[in-house]
Each structure stands twice: as structure tokens, then as C-alpha cells.
Length: 336
Image 1 (cartoon, rainbow, N blue to C red):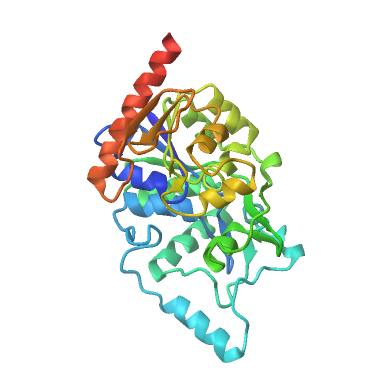
Image 2: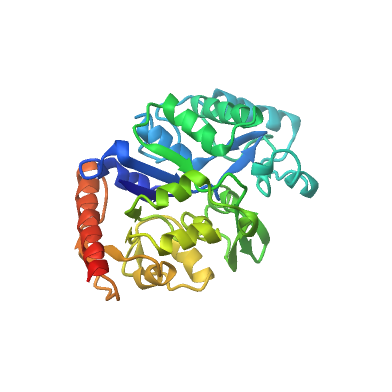
């Protein structure tokens, strides 16, 4: 059995080759929901959807989000209507009072669908319509995610980190903004002064996620430690469960060079060095690390080195085998 913590593209890329090492039927993926947004009344779960689409073999692997060869007629018409009506484009947050109205799961991340700022393909949108409908029928986000996973024929158990709202809020000199505004609408350009996981103090880890964390080992792929894994760690019982588990992490850095995304900028903003050493500091519960061959960082825990760049399934299998070796070394240390 194994549990993967997934956010962004790092862990999904690892999953592309993981099942030469780990049995899909005994694997759970716990998805980050801090990046979720309600857009035009629909709940969009980007990190969970990447895994759903990957397991359904429909993922757009050029972008690592959305469905391959999807059409965008609804999105295009939304923008045509807004332009014709003279309406300003997004992101268009709903008023403050509406941020805590409606679905509890959508709190602090509610956007108008007028000239939607995120590109949703037509088939992609059907997933969000179905998800939102299932939630409105009374299903939890865990139940809804499992229903969608079945629809995509996933051999994995895919579950959210929480059934409660936790929103990744980026603090900038220009004000607070949801992570999706910072990254999608603004291209990660604003200066970052802090990152807040709003709602985490009152959120509980989903029972499915907590159960999965007891199915050791736990694997953290090369995801962003701040906004991909940070929302999970901000939930006390989730972090405490990791402290008693056997955990292996793949660094998203090669020393101080990040593979992709805003991890370096965000880590610096929350007080960690933007490098592999900073990742180790952010993950004190991790028992062993997988680092790149070119990463000479010395850590106080077992390290397995390989080429951690993942461009295809063969690359991902190589990294997964390094993860397997790191798990063995971590367990040997525990016995010793």
C-alpha cells in the first residue's frame, strides 16, 4: 500500500511511472484542495482534476491541466458576451458578503463567471457541473470525487485532503488574492509577502485522507511545498498523522533551481530558503529524500539520488524506483 500527496504537476508526473513499482489497486492519492475555486457557480478542483484526467487517459499533457483536444465554445462565448456588453474581464470576485454565503466548501474563493479568468474546456466544464450537482445533492467532496474517479475508470482511490474549505490566499503589497488569481490571472508576477491557508484552523482532514496516511508509506512528489502541500500541513491532524508515518519526498529543486512554478518565490515569502535545504526544513516529518544526481545538498536524513527530471513515463518510473529505495532506507533507519 502507498499514499501519494498530490498538488500541481509534480506528483501527477511521478504517477505516470509509479505503477511499475506500486500497485494501483493499493494506492491512494490525496489531492490538494487549497487551489479550488468556485467560478460561475461551479466548484473547480484543479489538482484533483489533473489526477482524474490522468487516470482516465484524457489529460492534456502539454499543459498538465484540462482535457486533451477539448473545445472551448462556452468559454469563448462568455468572453464575447462580456466584450459586447462592455463588462470588465476577470478575475471578478463576488462581494465579500457572498464569499461566505452559499456552499460552505466554496468559501473565500468565489468568482463571477463573467468573462471567466480561467480557461475551462467544454468537457472539462461538464466535470465541474457534475461535481457541483453532486455536492448540491448532499454528497461530500470525498464522495463526489470518488464518484468522478469511477466515471473516469481510475484504478486509484482519489480523495481530497478535506471536505472543509481551505483557501490558499497570497498576500501581496497590492492586497490579498487567491492563488489562482496570483498564478493564472497574474502569471505569478506580484511580489509575495506571505501565504495564508484560510480556514485551515477550523478544517478537519477528510476521514479518507487520514485513513490513507496510515497505509504507509506516504510519498510526496516534487510538488510545490507551499501551495501544493502546505494546505494539507496547515490542518493539524493531517500534519500530526504524517509525523507518525513513514514519509519519502522528492525535492522539486536541484539545489536552488526549481523545476517549474513559483515554489522558490513562495518559499522565500514564508521564511524558507528557496532550495532543497529549505524543502527539508519545511518537511521535518520526512524520513528520507530523493534528490537529483546534480544536487549536492547534505541533509540529516537518508538520501537517494537519481535524475529527477521527468519528461515521460520512463523518467517517472526511474524516479519511482528511487522512491522505493528511499522507503526501504527510511524503514531500515526506523528499525535501527
